[in-house]
Length: 142
Image (cartoon, rainbow, N blue to C red):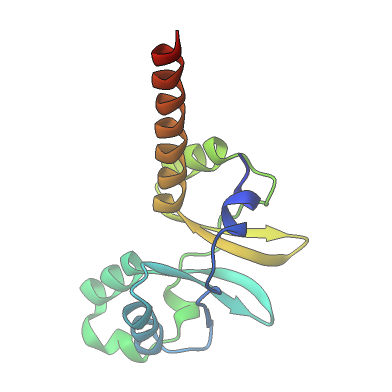
């Protein structure tokens, strides 16, 4: 299955911010929406990702004064992205290798979605459970 199929099933829009937003504003968005990361845009294009990890690192390094800085100064950039046609296992492998938990889904420079490692693992678990159920049914009918 592809990432495109996964994002088809996601109902809500993408929570994001602009690179010029303050770290405090971005942190409030993460908390308000109970999410771990979001894409950051600059001039209509994805510039990076701001995550809980970015927030933690910059607060540990600079203290509360970092809250007044711009997200574009502390975000993870450039964003590592995938295309809608990317296979789920390929995306999971990329996330594992790069030690990241979120991927913007980009096609022709436009963001179509945002997936977390949780989204992809959930899909894999559902697939394995369905295969196990089919096997049980096959054995029961044999």
